[in-house]
Amino acid sequence: MTSFTLISVSGGVVWLKTVVLMVAAAAMLACVMCRSPVRHLVGGKEMWKPNYNYTDWSREETFYVGDWLYFVYDKHMFNVLEVNETSYKNCTDQGFIFNITRGAGRDVFELTQPKPYYFLASGGYCYNGMKVAVNVVEFIPPPAPQPSPAKSGGTTITGISYPLISSILITTWAVFVMNQ
Image 1 (cartoon, rainbow, N blue to C red):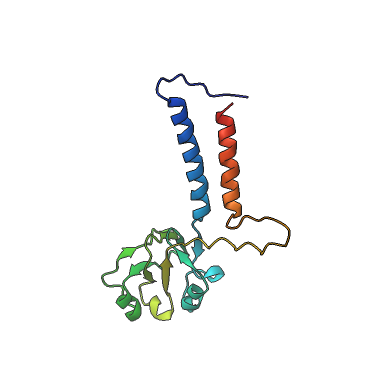
Image 2 (tube, one colour):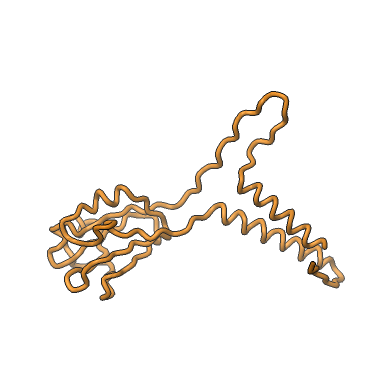
């Protein structure tokens, strides 16, 4: 087994072990607190086209900061513009915020802030339903499940979740490896 040996005068080995443990614990906690971004295919299997109810589609989705909208459409006919709420309601593309269209008909847009976003297709297609509003929220990790009540005759430890147990095991392993 490989061991780490450092010759130090002022406790450098202890400092290194402490840093390794802190990094291991921080990495475990970060994994517990995060989620992977989701790529939402706008309109689902219907994709980005006229005569579809994107309001119903967006109600069925949950959009978090860091997620992506994926617009798939006929590049010869349609486009995608980010607009403000007034332009969205009035189906106007004048003064749009951002032209998402890149020419391939396969365009993505990252949702970077917790706020409502508004998109539409220009050329009158907005009046045929090609507009979508999405409300983006911050991801808040769900609370740890509550432990089941203890049965008589035993001692229990409450408030320990599987991610915490994983963190404890990895930290213990790191300590063991560092002491080899």
